Image (cartoon, rainbow, N blue to C red; front, side, top):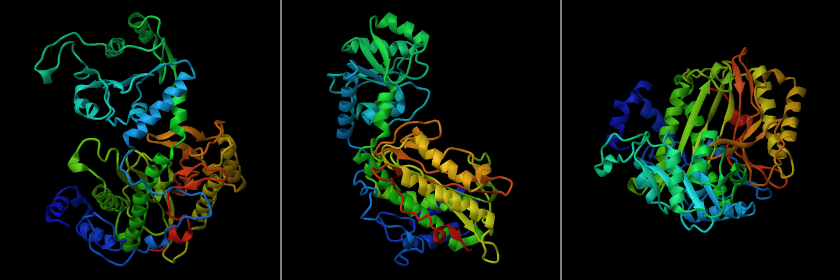
Length: 485
Protein backbone atom coordinates (compact mmCIF):
# COMPACT_ATOMS: atom_id res chain seq x y z
CA UNK A 1 0.00 0.00 0.00
CA UNK A 2 1.30 3.48 -0.73
CA UNK A 3 2.43 5.57 2.24
CA UNK A 4 0.05 8.47 1.62
CA UNK A 5 -2.99 6.26 1.76
CA UNK A 6 -1.83 4.50 4.91
CA UNK A 7 -1.13 7.83 6.63
CA UNK A 8 -4.56 9.11 5.66
CA UNK A 9 -6.32 6.04 6.99
CA UNK A 10 -4.45 5.87 10.29
CA UNK A 11 -4.69 9.60 10.88
CA UNK A 12 -8.36 9.98 10.00
CA UNK A 13 -11.58 8.34 11.08
CA UNK A 14 -10.10 4.86 10.66
CA UNK A 15 -8.16 5.44 13.84
CA UNK A 16 -11.45 4.99 15.68
CA UNK A 17 -11.31 1.31 14.81
CA UNK A 18 -8.32 0.84 17.02
CA UNK A 19 -4.67 0.07 16.52
CA UNK A 20 -3.72 -2.61 14.06
CA UNK A 21 -6.73 -2.12 11.77
CA UNK A 22 -4.70 -1.96 8.58
CA UNK A 23 -2.62 -4.95 9.54
CA UNK A 24 -5.82 -6.90 10.13
CA UNK A 25 -7.10 -5.82 6.69
CA UNK A 26 -3.80 -6.78 5.06
CA UNK A 27 -3.83 -10.20 6.71
CA UNK A 28 -7.26 -11.07 5.30
CA UNK A 29 -6.56 -9.40 1.95
CA UNK A 30 -3.56 -11.67 1.55
CA UNK A 31 -5.88 -14.66 1.76
CA UNK A 32 -8.00 -13.57 -1.21
CA UNK A 33 -7.51 -14.71 -4.82
CA UNK A 34 -5.25 -12.35 -6.77
CA UNK A 35 -7.16 -9.67 -8.68
CA UNK A 36 -6.05 -6.89 -10.97
CA UNK A 37 -5.72 -3.24 -10.15
CA UNK A 38 -6.12 -3.26 -6.37
CA UNK A 39 -3.61 -1.36 -4.25
CA UNK A 40 -5.02 -2.33 -0.86
CA UNK A 41 -4.04 -5.85 0.11
CA UNK A 42 -1.78 -6.34 -2.88
CA UNK A 43 0.34 -8.85 -1.02
CA UNK A 44 0.01 -12.34 -2.48
CA UNK A 45 -0.99 -15.00 0.00
CA UNK A 46 -2.45 -18.42 -0.59
CA UNK A 47 -4.21 -19.09 -3.90
CA UNK A 48 -7.58 -18.33 -2.36
CA UNK A 49 -9.12 -17.66 1.02
CA UNK A 50 -11.10 -20.34 2.78
CA UNK A 51 -14.33 -18.60 1.80
CA UNK A 52 -13.44 -18.08 -1.87
CA UNK A 53 -12.91 -21.82 -2.28
CA UNK A 54 -16.51 -22.48 -1.18
CA UNK A 55 -18.17 -20.27 -3.80
CA UNK A 56 -20.86 -21.90 -5.91
CA UNK A 57 -20.33 -22.59 -9.61
CA UNK A 58 -23.06 -22.27 -12.25
CA UNK A 59 -24.85 -25.40 -13.39
CA UNK A 60 -24.43 -25.65 -17.16
CA UNK A 61 -27.62 -27.72 -17.35
CA UNK A 62 -29.82 -25.04 -15.82
CA UNK A 63 -30.63 -21.45 -16.66
CA UNK A 64 -28.22 -19.16 -14.86
CA UNK A 65 -26.85 -15.64 -14.79
CA UNK A 66 -25.20 -14.20 -17.90
CA UNK A 67 -21.49 -13.60 -18.21
CA UNK A 68 -20.46 -10.34 -16.53
CA UNK A 69 -20.52 -7.30 -18.79
CA UNK A 70 -17.23 -5.94 -20.11
CA UNK A 71 -18.58 -2.37 -19.90
CA UNK A 72 -19.02 -0.05 -16.89
CA UNK A 73 -22.36 1.44 -17.87
CA UNK A 74 -25.04 0.97 -20.50
CA UNK A 75 -23.88 2.52 -23.78
CA UNK A 76 -25.75 5.42 -25.34
CA UNK A 77 -26.88 3.13 -28.14
CA UNK A 78 -28.86 1.18 -25.54
CA UNK A 79 -30.68 4.34 -24.43
CA UNK A 80 -31.48 5.27 -28.02
CA UNK A 81 -33.00 1.84 -28.65
CA UNK A 82 -34.97 2.10 -25.41
CA UNK A 83 -36.36 5.52 -26.34
CA UNK A 84 -37.30 4.17 -29.76
CA UNK A 85 -39.25 1.33 -28.13
CA UNK A 86 -40.90 3.74 -25.70
CA UNK A 87 -41.99 6.01 -28.54
CA UNK A 88 -43.45 2.99 -30.34
CA UNK A 89 -45.51 2.01 -27.32
CA UNK A 90 -46.76 5.57 -26.96
CA UNK A 91 -47.63 5.73 -30.67
CA UNK A 92 -49.85 2.68 -30.19
CA UNK A 93 -51.83 4.88 -27.79
CA UNK A 94 -51.95 7.83 -30.14
CA UNK A 95 -49.28 9.80 -28.28
CA UNK A 96 -46.49 11.52 -30.22
CA UNK A 97 -44.56 13.26 -27.43
CA UNK A 98 -43.45 12.53 -23.88
CA UNK A 99 -42.35 14.48 -20.82
CA UNK A 100 -40.51 12.65 -18.03
CA UNK A 101 -39.97 14.34 -14.67
CA UNK A 102 -39.08 11.42 -12.40
CA UNK A 103 -35.25 11.24 -12.14
CA UNK A 104 -35.08 7.46 -12.58
CA UNK A 105 -37.23 7.60 -15.70
CA UNK A 106 -35.00 10.33 -17.12
CA UNK A 107 -31.95 8.22 -16.37
CA UNK A 108 -33.51 5.04 -17.76
CA UNK A 109 -34.49 6.58 -21.08
CA UNK A 110 -31.63 8.98 -21.75
CA UNK A 111 -28.69 7.70 -19.69
CA UNK A 112 -28.28 11.15 -18.15
CA UNK A 113 -27.10 10.19 -14.66
CA UNK A 114 -27.55 13.07 -12.26
CA UNK A 115 -27.92 13.76 -8.55
CA UNK A 116 -31.47 14.16 -7.30
CA UNK A 117 -32.19 17.20 -5.13
CA UNK A 118 -35.04 19.69 -4.79
CA UNK A 119 -34.00 21.10 -8.17
CA UNK A 120 -36.49 19.92 -10.82
CA UNK A 121 -35.24 18.36 -14.04
CA UNK A 122 -37.17 17.00 -17.01
CA UNK A 123 -36.74 15.56 -20.48
CA UNK A 124 -39.06 16.09 -23.45
CA UNK A 125 -39.09 14.44 -26.87
CA UNK A 126 -41.37 14.34 -29.87
CA UNK A 127 -41.76 11.20 -31.93
CA UNK A 128 -39.49 12.61 -34.65
CA UNK A 129 -36.93 14.25 -32.34
CA UNK A 130 -33.48 12.74 -32.73
CA UNK A 131 -32.11 14.15 -29.46
CA UNK A 132 -33.81 14.91 -26.11
CA UNK A 133 -34.69 18.38 -24.85
CA UNK A 134 -34.04 19.10 -21.15
CA UNK A 135 -35.02 21.35 -18.29
CA UNK A 136 -31.96 21.52 -16.03
CA UNK A 137 -30.23 23.65 -13.36
CA UNK A 138 -26.99 25.47 -14.01
CA UNK A 139 -24.98 23.30 -11.64
CA UNK A 140 -25.54 20.32 -13.99
CA UNK A 141 -24.98 22.21 -17.24
CA UNK A 142 -21.68 20.48 -18.04
CA UNK A 143 -23.04 17.02 -17.23
CA UNK A 144 -26.22 17.27 -19.30
CA UNK A 145 -24.69 19.04 -22.29
CA UNK A 146 -21.87 16.52 -22.72
CA UNK A 147 -24.08 13.43 -22.92
CA UNK A 148 -27.12 13.08 -25.22
CA UNK A 149 -28.32 16.65 -25.61
CA UNK A 150 -30.63 18.29 -28.09
CA UNK A 151 -31.15 21.61 -26.35
CA UNK A 152 -33.21 22.74 -23.43
CA UNK A 153 -33.94 25.43 -20.89
CA UNK A 154 -31.55 26.16 -18.05
CA UNK A 155 -32.44 27.93 -14.81
CA UNK A 156 -29.75 29.06 -12.36
CA UNK A 157 -30.87 27.36 -9.15
CA UNK A 158 -33.78 26.71 -6.84
CA UNK A 159 -35.29 29.22 -6.30
CA UNK A 160 -34.56 30.91 -9.63
CA UNK A 161 -34.92 34.67 -9.95
CA UNK A 162 -36.04 36.04 -13.29
CA UNK A 163 -33.07 37.04 -15.45
CA UNK A 164 -30.53 36.08 -12.79
CA UNK A 165 -27.59 34.01 -14.04
CA UNK A 166 -24.58 34.84 -11.84
CA UNK A 167 -22.31 32.52 -13.82
CA UNK A 168 -22.96 34.79 -16.83
CA UNK A 169 -22.38 37.96 -14.80
CA UNK A 170 -26.12 38.65 -14.44
CA UNK A 171 -26.75 39.19 -10.73
CA UNK A 172 -30.18 40.59 -9.86
CA UNK A 173 -33.04 40.03 -7.42
CA UNK A 174 -35.74 39.36 -9.94
CA UNK A 175 -39.17 37.83 -9.53
CA UNK A 176 -39.15 34.18 -8.43
CA UNK A 177 -39.72 32.01 -11.49
CA UNK A 178 -42.44 29.36 -11.59
CA UNK A 179 -40.28 26.51 -12.91
CA UNK A 180 -43.25 24.45 -14.09
CA UNK A 181 -44.43 27.38 -16.18
CA UNK A 182 -40.82 27.91 -17.30
CA UNK A 183 -40.73 24.27 -18.44
CA UNK A 184 -43.98 24.47 -20.40
CA UNK A 185 -42.94 27.70 -22.10
CA UNK A 186 -39.74 25.99 -23.20
CA UNK A 187 -41.66 23.01 -24.59
CA UNK A 188 -43.94 25.38 -26.48
CA UNK A 189 -40.91 27.07 -28.04
CA UNK A 190 -39.45 23.68 -28.92
CA UNK A 191 -42.69 22.54 -30.58
CA UNK A 192 -45.07 19.67 -29.88
CA UNK A 193 -46.15 16.85 -32.20
CA UNK A 194 -49.85 16.10 -31.88
CA UNK A 195 -52.17 17.10 -29.09
CA UNK A 196 -51.12 14.61 -26.40
CA UNK A 197 -48.06 14.49 -24.17
CA UNK A 198 -47.26 11.30 -22.30
CA UNK A 199 -46.34 12.13 -18.68
CA UNK A 200 -44.90 9.89 -15.98
CA UNK A 201 -47.54 10.80 -13.43
CA UNK A 202 -50.42 13.22 -12.99
CA UNK A 203 -50.55 17.00 -12.70
CA UNK A 204 -51.92 18.89 -9.73
CA UNK A 205 -55.02 21.03 -10.42
CA UNK A 206 -52.92 24.19 -10.25
CA UNK A 207 -50.48 22.70 -12.78
CA UNK A 208 -53.34 21.72 -15.09
CA UNK A 209 -54.61 25.29 -15.00
CA UNK A 210 -51.16 26.57 -15.93
CA UNK A 211 -50.85 24.00 -18.72
CA UNK A 212 -54.18 25.03 -20.23
CA UNK A 213 -53.03 28.65 -20.42
CA UNK A 214 -49.64 27.92 -21.98
CA UNK A 215 -50.49 24.82 -24.04
CA UNK A 216 -54.19 25.12 -24.89
CA UNK A 217 -55.61 22.03 -26.54
CA UNK A 218 -52.81 19.77 -25.31
CA UNK A 219 -53.78 16.78 -23.16
CA UNK A 220 -51.41 15.24 -20.61
CA UNK A 221 -51.77 11.46 -20.43
CA UNK A 222 -50.32 9.44 -17.53
CA UNK A 223 -47.99 6.85 -19.11
CA UNK A 224 -46.09 5.96 -15.94
CA UNK A 225 -47.24 2.34 -16.23
CA UNK A 226 -45.82 2.12 -19.75
CA UNK A 227 -42.31 3.16 -18.72
CA UNK A 228 -42.47 1.03 -15.56
CA UNK A 229 -43.49 -2.04 -17.58
CA UNK A 230 -40.34 -1.55 -19.64
CA UNK A 231 -38.16 -1.01 -16.58
CA UNK A 232 -39.48 -4.13 -14.84
CA UNK A 233 -38.34 -6.52 -17.59
CA UNK A 234 -34.57 -6.30 -17.93
CA UNK A 235 -32.69 -6.57 -21.22
CA UNK A 236 -29.66 -8.85 -21.67
CA UNK A 237 -27.29 -5.88 -21.38
CA UNK A 238 -28.87 -4.77 -18.11
CA UNK A 239 -28.58 -8.28 -16.68
CA UNK A 240 -24.94 -8.58 -17.78
CA UNK A 241 -24.08 -5.30 -16.05
CA UNK A 242 -26.04 -6.49 -13.00
CA UNK A 243 -23.99 -9.69 -12.90
CA UNK A 244 -20.75 -7.70 -13.13
CA UNK A 245 -21.68 -5.89 -9.93
CA UNK A 246 -22.16 -9.25 -8.23
CA UNK A 247 -18.65 -10.35 -9.14
CA UNK A 248 -17.40 -7.74 -6.68
CA UNK A 249 -20.23 -8.39 -4.26
CA UNK A 250 -19.29 -12.06 -4.05
CA UNK A 251 -15.66 -11.12 -3.37
CA UNK A 252 -16.86 -8.79 -0.62
CA UNK A 253 -18.82 -11.57 1.05
CA UNK A 254 -15.82 -13.90 0.95
CA UNK A 255 -13.57 -11.21 2.42
CA UNK A 256 -16.04 -10.36 5.21
CA UNK A 257 -16.47 -14.03 6.13
CA UNK A 258 -12.70 -14.56 6.19
CA UNK A 259 -12.30 -11.43 8.31
CA UNK A 260 -14.72 -12.81 10.89
CA UNK A 261 -13.11 -16.26 10.87
CA UNK A 262 -9.64 -14.75 11.15
CA UNK A 263 -10.24 -12.14 13.85
CA UNK A 264 -13.20 -13.72 15.61
CA UNK A 265 -14.45 -12.08 18.77
CA UNK A 266 -11.72 -9.42 18.74
CA UNK A 267 -13.61 -7.14 16.35
CA UNK A 268 -16.97 -5.40 15.96
CA UNK A 269 -19.48 -5.78 13.17
CA UNK A 270 -18.67 -2.15 12.28
CA UNK A 271 -15.00 -2.98 11.75
CA UNK A 272 -15.87 -5.88 9.46
CA UNK A 273 -18.04 -3.53 7.41
CA UNK A 274 -15.35 -0.85 7.14
CA UNK A 275 -12.58 -3.29 6.33
CA UNK A 276 -14.64 -5.00 3.63
CA UNK A 277 -15.82 -1.78 2.01
CA UNK A 278 -12.28 -0.38 2.00
CA UNK A 279 -10.88 -3.50 0.36
CA UNK A 280 -13.60 -4.20 -2.22
CA UNK A 281 -14.17 -0.63 -3.41
CA UNK A 282 -10.46 -0.16 -3.96
CA UNK A 283 -10.66 -3.20 -6.23
CA UNK A 284 -13.80 -1.97 -7.96
CA UNK A 285 -12.61 1.56 -8.66
CA UNK A 286 -9.20 0.31 -9.75
CA UNK A 287 -10.87 -1.89 -12.35
CA UNK A 288 -13.35 0.66 -13.72
CA UNK A 289 -12.53 2.96 -16.61
CA UNK A 290 -12.69 6.18 -14.60
CA UNK A 291 -10.79 8.23 -17.21
CA UNK A 292 -9.07 10.26 -14.48
CA UNK A 293 -12.37 11.42 -13.05
CA UNK A 294 -14.03 12.41 -16.34
CA UNK A 295 -17.79 12.91 -16.37
CA UNK A 296 -19.99 9.96 -17.35
CA UNK A 297 -17.37 7.38 -16.28
CA UNK A 298 -17.97 5.04 -13.36
CA UNK A 299 -21.48 6.37 -12.80
CA UNK A 300 -23.40 5.00 -9.81
CA UNK A 301 -20.81 2.34 -8.94
CA UNK A 302 -20.18 1.26 -5.37
CA UNK A 303 -20.26 -1.74 -3.04
CA UNK A 304 -21.98 -0.94 0.25
CA UNK A 305 -21.53 -3.54 2.99
CA UNK A 306 -23.56 -3.84 6.19
CA UNK A 307 -22.68 -6.24 8.97
CA UNK A 308 -24.80 -6.68 12.07
CA UNK A 309 -24.50 -9.09 14.95
CA UNK A 310 -26.63 -9.89 17.97
CA UNK A 311 -29.97 -8.26 18.90
CA UNK A 312 -29.91 -5.78 16.00
CA UNK A 313 -30.59 -8.71 13.63
CA UNK A 314 -34.00 -9.14 15.27
CA UNK A 315 -35.47 -6.09 13.51
CA UNK A 316 -36.19 -5.90 9.77
CA UNK A 317 -35.29 -2.19 9.63
CA UNK A 318 -33.37 -1.36 12.83
CA UNK A 319 -33.16 2.21 14.08
CA UNK A 320 -30.07 1.48 16.16
CA UNK A 321 -26.45 1.57 14.90
CA UNK A 322 -24.63 -1.54 13.77
CA UNK A 323 -21.89 -1.41 16.37
CA UNK A 324 -21.57 -4.54 18.45
CA UNK A 325 -18.74 -6.85 19.42
CA UNK A 326 -18.92 -10.18 17.62
CA UNK A 327 -19.48 -12.94 20.13
CA UNK A 328 -20.29 -16.60 20.48
CA UNK A 329 -23.88 -17.90 20.34
CA UNK A 330 -25.01 -14.93 18.26
CA UNK A 331 -26.88 -14.39 15.00
CA UNK A 332 -24.97 -12.41 12.37
CA UNK A 333 -25.78 -10.98 8.97
CA UNK A 334 -23.53 -9.85 6.13
CA UNK A 335 -25.48 -7.77 3.65
CA UNK A 336 -25.42 -4.69 1.44
CA UNK A 337 -25.97 -3.42 -2.07
CA UNK A 338 -23.55 -3.40 -5.01
CA UNK A 339 -23.97 -1.48 -8.26
CA UNK A 340 -22.00 -0.80 -11.41
CA UNK A 341 -23.45 1.77 -13.78
CA UNK A 342 -26.52 1.85 -11.55
CA UNK A 343 -27.21 -1.88 -11.94
CA UNK A 344 -26.96 -4.47 -9.19
CA UNK A 345 -28.83 -5.12 -5.99
CA UNK A 346 -28.85 -6.74 -2.56
CA UNK A 347 -26.90 -9.75 -1.32
CA UNK A 348 -27.58 -10.90 2.24
CA UNK A 349 -26.51 -14.03 4.09
CA UNK A 350 -27.63 -15.07 7.56
CA UNK A 351 -25.18 -16.69 9.99
CA UNK A 352 -25.24 -18.50 13.32
CA UNK A 353 -22.17 -18.37 15.55
CA UNK A 354 -21.68 -21.41 17.77
CA UNK A 355 -21.50 -21.18 21.55
CA UNK A 356 -18.39 -21.86 23.63
CA UNK A 357 -18.94 -25.59 23.33
CA UNK A 358 -19.15 -25.43 19.54
CA UNK A 359 -22.92 -26.03 19.48
CA UNK A 360 -25.57 -24.04 17.63
CA UNK A 361 -28.69 -22.75 19.34
CA UNK A 362 -31.75 -24.84 18.41
CA UNK A 363 -34.20 -21.92 18.12
CA UNK A 364 -31.83 -20.02 15.86
CA UNK A 365 -31.37 -23.17 13.79
CA UNK A 366 -35.14 -23.42 13.29
CA UNK A 367 -35.57 -19.83 12.12
CA UNK A 368 -32.48 -20.06 9.92
CA UNK A 369 -33.62 -23.29 8.26
CA UNK A 370 -37.22 -22.27 7.56
CA UNK A 371 -36.20 -18.88 6.17
CA UNK A 372 -33.59 -20.51 3.97
CA UNK A 373 -36.13 -23.07 2.71
CA UNK A 374 -38.40 -20.20 1.72
CA UNK A 375 -35.57 -18.71 -0.33
CA UNK A 376 -35.41 -21.93 -2.33
CA UNK A 377 -39.21 -21.93 -2.72
CA UNK A 378 -39.08 -18.44 -4.20
CA UNK A 379 -36.26 -19.44 -6.55
CA UNK A 380 -38.08 -22.51 -7.84
CA UNK A 381 -41.39 -20.65 -8.18
CA UNK A 382 -40.02 -17.64 -10.07
CA UNK A 383 -41.25 -18.68 -13.50
CA UNK A 384 -43.27 -17.05 -16.24
CA UNK A 385 -47.04 -17.34 -15.80
CA UNK A 386 -47.02 -17.40 -12.00
CA UNK A 387 -48.61 -14.48 -10.18
CA UNK A 388 -46.75 -12.60 -7.45
CA UNK A 389 -49.62 -13.28 -5.06
CA UNK A 390 -49.63 -17.06 -5.56
CA UNK A 391 -45.88 -17.26 -4.91
CA UNK A 392 -46.23 -15.18 -1.75
CA UNK A 393 -49.12 -17.42 -0.66
CA UNK A 394 -47.02 -20.58 -0.96
CA UNK A 395 -44.19 -19.09 1.07
CA UNK A 396 -46.41 -17.70 3.83
CA UNK A 397 -48.32 -21.00 4.07
CA UNK A 398 -45.01 -22.82 4.52
CA UNK A 399 -44.05 -20.43 7.31
CA UNK A 400 -47.36 -21.06 9.08
CA UNK A 401 -47.03 -24.83 8.58
CA UNK A 402 -43.66 -24.71 10.32
CA UNK A 403 -45.09 -22.70 13.21
CA UNK A 404 -42.93 -19.61 12.71
CA UNK A 405 -45.74 -17.25 11.72
CA UNK A 406 -45.26 -15.01 14.77
CA UNK A 407 -41.78 -14.20 13.43
CA UNK A 408 -43.03 -13.07 10.01
CA UNK A 409 -42.92 -9.28 9.58
CA UNK A 410 -43.09 -8.63 5.84
CA UNK A 411 -43.70 -9.94 2.32
CA UNK A 412 -41.15 -12.35 0.82
CA UNK A 413 -39.71 -10.02 -1.82
CA UNK A 414 -39.92 -6.81 -3.83
CA UNK A 415 -39.15 -6.02 -7.43
CA UNK A 416 -35.60 -4.81 -8.00
CA UNK A 417 -34.37 -1.98 -10.19
CA UNK A 418 -31.92 0.89 -10.20
CA UNK A 419 -33.89 2.51 -7.38
CA UNK A 420 -33.79 -0.59 -5.20
CA UNK A 421 -37.49 -1.30 -4.62
CA UNK A 422 -39.72 -1.25 -7.68
CA UNK A 423 -42.93 -3.01 -8.74
CA UNK A 424 -44.05 -5.72 -8.78
CA UNK A 425 -43.95 -7.27 -5.32
CA UNK A 426 -44.05 -10.86 -4.11
CA UNK A 427 -46.96 -9.96 -1.87
CA UNK A 428 -50.41 -11.38 -1.21
CA UNK A 429 -52.13 -8.36 -2.76
CA UNK A 430 -50.07 -8.12 -5.97
CA UNK A 431 -51.58 -10.13 -8.83
CA UNK A 432 -49.00 -9.17 -11.44
CA UNK A 433 -47.98 -12.05 -13.69
CA UNK A 434 -44.29 -12.84 -13.59
CA UNK A 435 -42.43 -12.33 -16.84
CA UNK A 436 -39.04 -13.60 -17.87
CA UNK A 437 -36.15 -11.32 -16.83
CA UNK A 438 -38.05 -9.56 -14.08
CA UNK A 439 -35.77 -9.16 -11.06
CA UNK A 440 -36.64 -9.56 -7.38
CA UNK A 441 -35.06 -9.48 -3.97
CA UNK A 442 -35.23 -12.65 -1.85
CA UNK A 443 -36.28 -11.80 1.69
CA UNK A 444 -38.51 -14.30 3.53
CA UNK A 445 -36.95 -13.19 6.79
CA UNK A 446 -37.91 -14.30 10.30
CA UNK A 447 -37.36 -12.12 13.38
CA UNK A 448 -37.63 -12.74 17.12
CA UNK A 449 -36.93 -9.60 19.20
CA UNK A 450 -37.66 -11.48 22.45
CA UNK A 451 -34.95 -14.04 21.71
CA UNK A 452 -32.74 -11.27 20.28
CA UNK A 453 -32.17 -12.90 16.91
CA UNK A 454 -33.32 -12.68 13.31
CA UNK A 455 -32.43 -14.13 9.93
CA UNK A 456 -32.94 -12.44 6.60
CA UNK A 457 -31.54 -13.21 3.18
CA UNK A 458 -31.41 -11.51 -0.16
CA UNK A 459 -29.99 -11.81 -3.65
CA UNK A 460 -31.31 -11.02 -7.08
CA UNK A 461 -33.67 -13.69 -8.36
CA UNK A 462 -34.27 -13.36 -12.10
CA UNK A 463 -37.50 -14.87 -13.42
CA UNK A 464 -36.97 -17.68 -15.93
CA UNK A 465 -39.13 -19.95 -18.05
CA UNK A 466 -39.18 -22.96 -15.68
CA UNK A 467 -37.60 -21.49 -12.53
CA UNK A 468 -35.59 -18.48 -11.50
CA UNK A 469 -31.87 -18.08 -11.13
CA UNK A 470 -29.69 -16.13 -8.71
CA UNK A 471 -27.08 -13.52 -9.54
CA UNK A 472 -24.76 -14.32 -6.62
CA UNK A 473 -22.59 -17.41 -6.18
CA UNK A 474 -22.32 -16.98 -2.39
CA UNK A 475 -23.53 -20.23 -0.75
CA UNK A 476 -26.60 -20.68 1.44
CA UNK A 477 -25.13 -23.78 3.10
CA UNK A 478 -24.51 -24.58 6.74
CA UNK A 479 -20.85 -24.90 5.84
CA UNK A 480 -20.85 -21.23 4.82
CA UNK A 481 -23.30 -19.82 7.36
CA UNK A 482 -22.72 -21.76 10.59
CA UNK A 483 -19.49 -20.46 12.07
CA UNK A 484 -17.29 -21.64 14.91
CA UNK A 485 -15.00 -18.91 16.17
